[in-house]
Length: 433
Image (cartoon, rainbow, N blue to C red; front, side, top):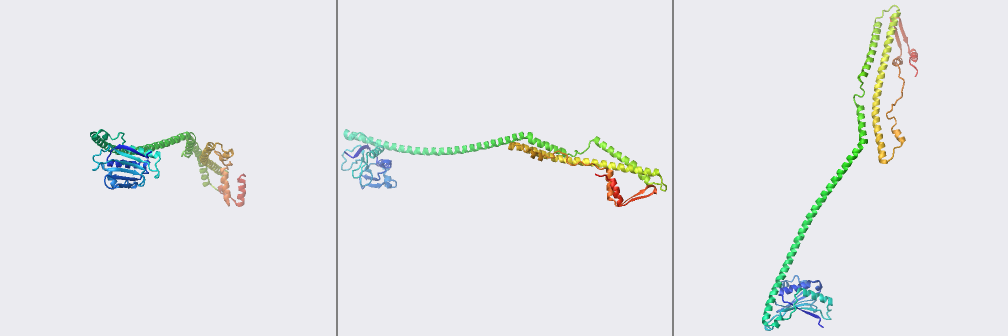
């Protein structure tokens, strides 16, 4: 049983045959075929290794040949064995010019001898399939030899036309492949540009969307804040406004001004006291200055004493009344000041109670509230009895004097008191507290 396979293939040019053999060598199932031998009708064969396939200029020039001068193209494992693929053709020479030539070329698949490590069935079938795919296989035998010289010429011309058509189709296919690659590259480039533009647009839209979301979130926060302010206005803000209004009312310039009726009554009292002082003081001074002197006159002495006592008593009551009025005015002033402070204290205490209830959920201890609200809006101070104005004036005069002397009216003489007498008089004049 033969270990080789012979396939009849359509005739092609030298360049086309060389290209197809190189394509076969690039197939994955033929990577072990590393030796190429090209034999021409004359001269020595061209022998190349796989590393030289891409850089050998003579091989590149052979792939461009359109003639038929190559007898054999042998692609095998190495130079020492026959395992591989061999493309061969018969070429007419001077000696056998009259010998009819076949219309086909031959493609032989060699399995290799037993000593060379022959190909197994699967590898052999794979390289045979690859070879048949790259060369057009024919089924008829030598039609020119069977049908005569005329038919041989016809078939030769037909074969040449087919060869040219195959070459043209191959070039068209290569051009189409190249053009398709160019179009694919343009399409990929255009798709990449469109994808980049789309991505850029989507990034811009996403950024715009995020900005709008942030603006909406900020607006919602602002609305929530305003709503909270409106809700709180019924308690904290309104309470603070009322506190400020109360403080402004307390600080007002007209807070201590009297009404017209009160002012009228006050001036009536002042005028009354002034008239009494005039009617008692002027006569007392007049009679004191115009004392006739000499003899004792009880009428003159009694009149002088009565006028003097009336004047001093009226002056004492008037001073006491003015003192009481001034004390009440100053007490009211201090009360308003204290009320202003108590308003701030009360407002702070109320806010503290609300914050404790809102934040901690519980009330402040009642003892602490009592301590914090102690003396709020209360009247502080001890009530003391008011001293008589005349007694106060007399006490001041007696305690500050080292001696006291009175002139009796009418030139009757003088009354004098030393320090001890003043102290005795002071004990009798000043009431015990």
